[in-house]
Every structure is written in C-alpha cells, then in structure tokens.
Image (cartoon, rainbow, N blue to C red; front, side, top):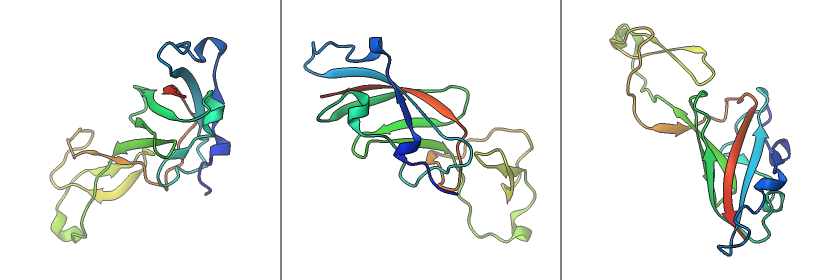
Length: 156
C-alpha cells in the first residue's frame, strides 16, 4: 500500500483562527485543522508530511507546534518542527525469538489495528491492561483511519 504524502493532507484555517496573536508578539499564531488518512494509505516512516508552511499562513518558519489530542483513539500525536511532520505514537511490544514451547501460556496481543496476533506474553490474562513500556512510533505497515487534528502553530 502507498504511504500518506503531503498532497493527501488537507489544511483548513478559519478566518478567526488565522494570526490570532495579531503580531503582538512579533510572531504569527495560527490554529489550523489538518485531516489525513483513509484506512488504505499507510503511515510513512518518519511521520506524516505536511503541506508547505505557506498553507498554514507562514512565510519564513514555524517555531513551535502543539497538537490538540484526541482522547478516544489511543494514539499520541507530536509535531516534528525540524521536518514539518506529524508523528504518531502508539503502545508497542518488542519480543525476542523465544521458542513457543519455552514461552508458556499467555494472552494473544493486539496491534494498533486491533488485529489479534500470534505473539504471547507469558502468564498474562485476557482483557487485562499491562504496563509494557514507552510509546513507539507507529509502524509504517499501519494504515490509519481518517483523522482530523487541530494544531496551534507559532512562527513567522
């Protein structure tokens, strides 16, 4: 499957959300809506590339970006200022090459697409939440569903 490209990202800015600081801080502050994903295009390695900064009302640079989180989808979104991309993080588990016979019984794990896999964690129970470590960037094999986010951007 092809990956999401900047041309697959829609940017919307209402008149009242453009340059909300009115230059008072010598910076442009804009609230922008971005929409991407359709369940068939995959997450690109390194993040979702955004259209050029001019599409967000900036001429020189974006100095800061914050994303309003969607509390219901289980992902964490981060603006990558250096690369002008949106990074998506999810819970991940890394397993070794332990033989099935040595692994014992355990509940099957689910991936970000809610597909049950063959991986097991020893001595776990079904429908139970465990602390498995830090978030990882979404794998490039996952095709995110349609997503609309709001970004607060500061720049020139």
